Image 1 (cartoon, one colour):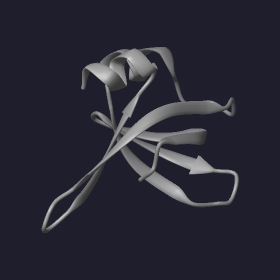
Image 2 (cartoon, rainbow, N blue to C red):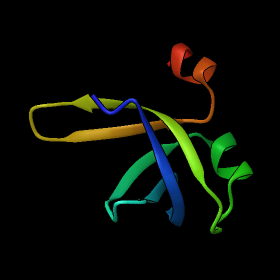
Image 3 (spheres, helix red, strand yellow):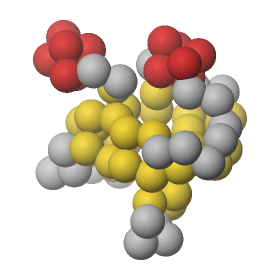
Length: 73
């Protein structure tokens, strides 16, 4: 399970953010509208709680700004 991701938000397409971690791995994460509105593309650290949804044909990563948002999901 991927519990939390920290890195730079380098690209946004719709509600999907591309986050680059310090190790050079990029993650596509579905983000909430509030998370997207507060975090513009920049070189500052970006940190989100994550939920990895595993299906037969896909693995989808959802990101949440706060632990409370994560718990509600």
